[in-house]
Image (tube, rainbow, N blue to C red; front, side, top):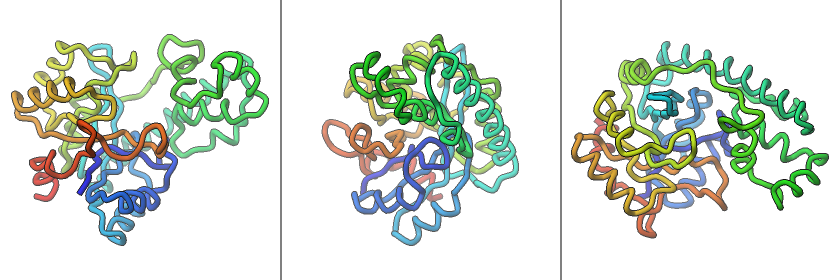
Length: 288
């Protein structure tokens, strides 16, 4: 059975409902799926219920945005009690802060000459992909988009030019938990704390080996996302060695958002989808 411990739904910036995610996973031969929407646990009952209905082990989770040593650090929380009071308090703070941030970025884009429909920003958890898509989807922006990008960009390409750090319409996050309190919160909710996409190459992450080593040595993480979407085989081999050296659980996550053509569900390693045999110790912990 295939596995994916890092996916997103419409509860944050994904395209699929939790039920649609489970149905897709079932059709593709997956046995375990974690819903890890950004900084919230909304729609988790639907996800759990759909997992039972379609015979998929549905793992409640969340992707927590944090920072460490002047770099973004995303933490995958797996198998948390999604009804935990502290988890839900944190989610409420994030939803409110992200709304303010998203609207500020939209205002900057408007000043920059882009057309936006505020109705397209009406999301429970407003994230940068929503803001980018509000620009991309507006018909009055098409000519300018083609001039600047050569073709209609996807949201990731637009974010890199306008909404990423040091870009003209970027607004920094004002609210986030530091890593240690975030990990403590995850553990108190019965979950495991996993370092997300440690070989990510965007400006906000792009860890050096020394930086990643400091994260691992200085913080009480349970696991490392060894198998991730953009890893080269050499990077995966290195991450496996790090996990073994520091006694970290090995996880696998595609960071799936529902964009199947560009970023499909599941992680491939040497041409094959990662299955349960790649993460046996983690799965044992999840089931214990």
